[in-house]
Image (cartoon, rainbow, N blue to C red; front, top):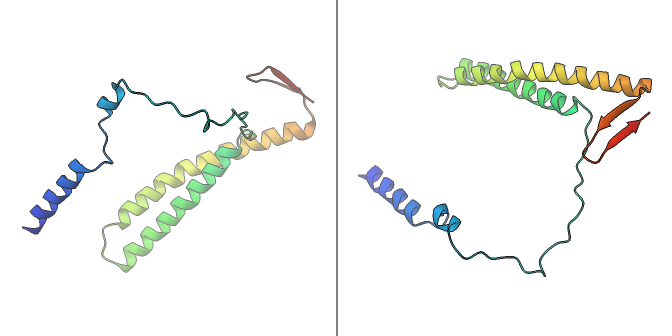
Length: 137
């Protein structure tokens, strides 16, 4: 009886709550509000941080590898110490993180190392950007 009452209460709260919004009614409404000019911020130039090639891939790979290794170790510990059925899921999930993590880490490190060697050698490169061509030497 308690579960039926709890299910009905959850259904009632979900149907009445203001968190759910009928987007079809909002999308076709004729009223659209615009912000007041007092609250508008002047357009700031978009500043995007430039990262060298392979840097982000290397960091993501390292994070995936370490998180997956912790999951595998935790799964082995849980498997030996308790009777929970979560251990195989932790081990499989950890392996699923470690394998792509190692691939990303090695490919990113190789790309990053090649970029650093080119920069150290002083090679010239022409890169086409959105605003034009940048000549680096």
